[in-house]
Image 1 (cartoon, helix red, strand yellow):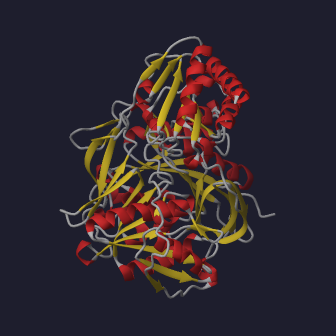
Image 2: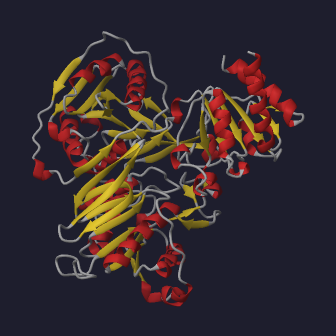
Length: 339
Length: 275
């Protein structure tokens, strides 16, 4: 078997987190990863380090410490801002060979995936993508166990790479809860030398429009529509607005073009943890259910009494969502008037 | 305007589309012995995002000429599915097929595909679907670009080719925004799912598409691969176990009544839950 550039015996007992940032603030997914790594590291006696690449990134170091980093490795250079895959891969690669972490984690975001995909090949190591949970097997000398779904039938696979380091994994936003930050917590800043030349960077960023996308992972209420609502997302939107929530969808309505793909919930979409998920006209395919399994309460409405979705629901309504939802909108409006 | 069909170094444009045949997601099982995906019982289809990748390549061929090659790694049964791509307008299929390639993870898959692309000769653009519906990780395109030392633009909804400057410009979608990135050729482009409407196959092309000579099969020895980098042997990751997905115990209470009665109960529950 082909070996990684360094092996388990040369690896340091440390979790490294690639810290993504936008407009001078760390992305939430990076803080979620720091939170999770901190908990795993405390149980194992390991260290947590953040890798922060960009330009004028110093103010974000404090947040990395507050969310659990013991060290922040910082590369500060104009060519690292905005993100280009060549520049970030080159510097991350050098830093990893210097620090030799046992584990390297990225958010499963557009930039995180681009970086992880390149880095894993350059380091000749494995990459467990889209983990839904992470554990550390200390008996085997610190083997990372990445849990991934996608096998159908409610089965998850436990993926490991016992002989390769760093053990790379990506995790989607919203999978891990955020820890409470410890303000005033400090650590060590390790500056990285940046030897980049503009001509070595192939990507030219011609235009860049940053916006706040829909963030279903933070919605307190999620109203999800499946095939059975026949495209009536206007109704779901009305309900979601009344409840202060957002609208999501299963895959079929997205494929039909009834709703934006960024609102797709599930394995190939977004993983959410709302207080309440109200699922309308969805059969309950496993690929979808993984997206709402962390919801506080699940309410399902479906015409088919045998639909699997009822197995995953706290409250099940056998009926037509297109009749129940308008009635529910009426009832909520009436309540509001009374109050 | 550059002469149609020629890339700036005087040869034909060559666009490669990486495609994969996947089991329909709802029909996949896990083999309890090998703990690998068991596709045998499931019906298959071309990975839907790869159809968007093919369409993007065919649009460039419509405009600039040249040829479109379909590249795939998998067992021989992939062939008839991939031939649909020929009937849509692609020129040839290269299928990397060998038992030694089986059980490949991202590292081994990207290595093998990269060897295939190197064997194809000069290539201008390599298109991939955003992700595969059975792996859903989107890690192949950047890994492939790394092995090949190509530039990359991922999650692209539109491309423009500038033949004179030999660069490609792509609109890369990001949550809530986008980037326009420009990279030199050759490049790997991952195509955003659903960004275009894949054309129907041309039934007149079907007999041509199903002729034996449209498909070239390459084995491990044809590709001259380093065998420690392919298949299970070349895969750092392994499935060390399977577990039941942890799921929160649900109350599973059925609510009955007219829509109005149910609505009243739900409204009350929602008020309690969201207090």
